[in-house]
Length: 291
Image 1 (cartoon, rainbow, N blue to C red):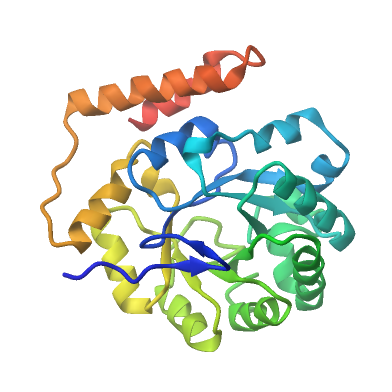
Image 2 (image 1 turned 45 degrees about the vertical axis):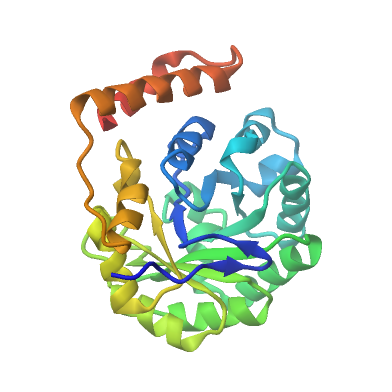
């Protein structure tokens, strides 16, 4: 089996295009550094509120915390006001973001009520204005992460992808479930293939990639330019290195109990290091269960 074609977003060279997905409460600095040690090509922050950044909210700004060893880093922003999003993007870029990713797929009610996240799937005109405003505000690449549509009767990802491209997006990530689905049911990878045929910017596939073998399967089926892995990497950062080994025709062994324990301990140390005395270690309990 041959290795994947290299992914390029803007001027950024991103190897084989394996990306750690943004996950609220999960892809903090400690987890991103762990993922980077297992050969992921790009890591993404937790979802960051544009309003919170512009208002200089301490808890929001803390999400921009980064480390040189995790580079390159994408910061994902959510919001619906183009002016606010543009200013938030400037702040994130000034703080070291290598890519600004715009969330247009989060189905969480408190986000949707703000007209942000997946709510933008119901308003392609705002998608265009939002992407354009952020594109004009920063010099780093701007990407979009979205879903297949608001509901099964409103699958409009092709329209959203074209609108985002026309407005200046440098790449788009497709999680082919609807907002109504949340994480239930199966991701329809065929929609990723359709978007790939419809636009000229890089297309990144996401959804139901839980094993190293799934990376190659998604790539072959959809011809996507990169693969983003979220829940499949929780407690299993080995998935990135294993996927690359498979692509090169190499044998991949599952990590031993001792290896898992060692990585968990390093994760704990990095988590503690990132706290700077601000929070307790109670938040690490769930991470222990991942392993």
